[in-house]
Amino acid sequence: MRIAIYGAGGVGGYYGAVLARAGHQVSLIARGAHLTAIRERGLGVRSPGGDFTVRPAAASGDPGDIGPVDAVIVAVKSMQLAAVREGIAPLLGRGTLVVPLLNGVDAHDALVPAVGRGRMGKGLTRIISEVAAPGEIRHVGVDPYVAIAEWDGGGSPRVDALVAALQGAGVDAEVPADIDAAIWLKFLFVCSVGGVCGACRMPLGPVRTLPESRSLLRRAMEEIAAVAVAHGVSLQGDAVRFALNTVDTFPAEGTSSLQRDIAAGRPSELDAWTGAAVRLGATVGVPTPVHSFIHAVLLPGELQARADGCGG
Image 1 (cartoon, one colour):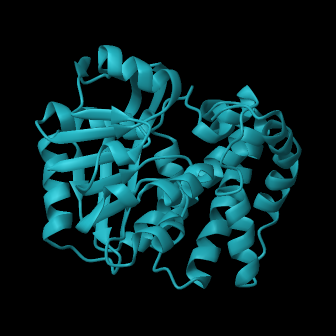
Image 2 (image 1 turned 45 degrees about the vertical axis):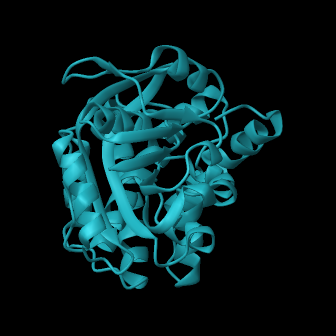
Image 3 (image 1 turned 180 degrees about the horizontal axis):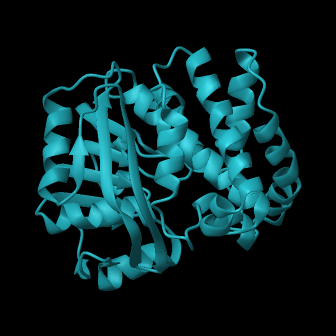
């Protein structure tokens, strides 16, 4: 397949690398020193499953250098979606599938004006990975998982082709029974963990162990579960218990990308995570006191990071 990875950071870089290693024609859209390093030395991956380096079919900061592809995996941070909307057109052919693998719940809605409903898919991923150095992705943990579906939640030949490509690259990929429920369940997890750990300024281990902070984490999850149900999402009844059990399987030293950005003084996805939980709750009349408090606590630092103009 011809696959473009729009945003070759920790998530996009990892999937682009394994797809290229599996023999697909992968083009990476990156920027800055990371792009320069990929062009000069290829893209390296350090992973518990083995280290390797690939040379993608193309690497550029301009989608116009690449042209139409079969599928576009969008793996930028939420604050970069506006730039994706402006730049994605050259990648789009008549049957191109566009799949966002972001951490919020509405990236697909944000991309529709630029992509068109007919090309728009939905997706999510579970992986802990980061750019360790320019041109180098570090897969920290969690077996890579990707769920993909068409806009209506179903499969199709193009969805099946991308799922098969990922499976052939060693990724656990599928068309889930309910993509919207899957996206919201992930949002319940990452938004609550990222927000609570970010506010506590501690990694996952101490936060999940201390009764007071574990209770805060549980209440944050319960708020998002209530918001999801109010929005008509068929979230499983034991979603919060499932998410908390999942928390207990993660490395104790684990941190979220939101938390790492906050700690480094970089602009973060606070607005698309905690801010979205608050806004989406307000639209359906569901109170979100925990997320509202976390948002208020973290917002001053977020605004300062944006004013400082630090790179993401």
